Amino acid sequence: MITDIDGIALGNPVSQNSYQGSVFTDEGPWSDGTAMELQKDHGLCSKHFSNDIFTSQCSLGGLIPHYTKDMNKLIYEPASSDAALNGQILQAMSKYGADSSAKKFITRISEKRRKICATHTQYIFSWGGTTTQRGEGWNDRFKGHGALKVYLANANLITGIKLIDRLAREQDRKSITMLASLRRQGKRWSDYYQHLSQDLQYAPASTARMLDCAVPSVGSFYMSALSCLYQLCNLV
View 1: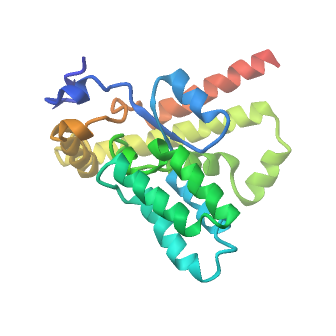
View 2: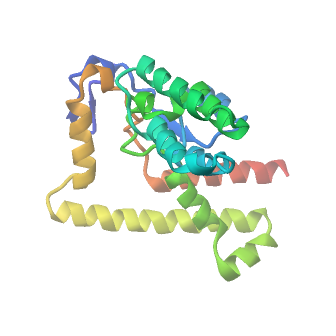
């Protein structure tokens, strides 16, 4: 049982017993199995999922504005209960289900509701994020832009390892600079982190499922990726 995280006491027994953490991923054949193997609470990226609102509304004509609003409500606005959410889903199906694309999307929402709808994901503490934005940011840095992107397209595995190593060291330097500034202000962490930690500490039992808060340094995440690439290189 975890009683505190970084010196923040957790008086809530649900928090203390829910330290397995959470992970938000894109939707794919690998995502459920990966989260299960990691033993993490699993949510789907709300941004990627909601993009399909626009591809599923093309044949709705004058109903498009209403459909967009109703689908966003299902995904982003918490209902009072799962029963209430199910009622909203049934209403949406009655209103838009005659269209095959809309019916398919509403059915997906119903099937994935525990991983995509705020009615359920509000109980997975995620530092306020329900998207894969942080992972996408890493992908963007790794793939590069302009001349670097062209160069990497023709590079080998060793070049990829060296790039990850450089990015890790750059991120560690930035982290040290940020921490030094906070220490000079007499702070242990940022105001944003403190605010979220307090929210977790005093959260009611029904909402205290939490993200894995003992997050390693960003650099150590990069170095884990680097280690994987070294292993792959050895296999090759």
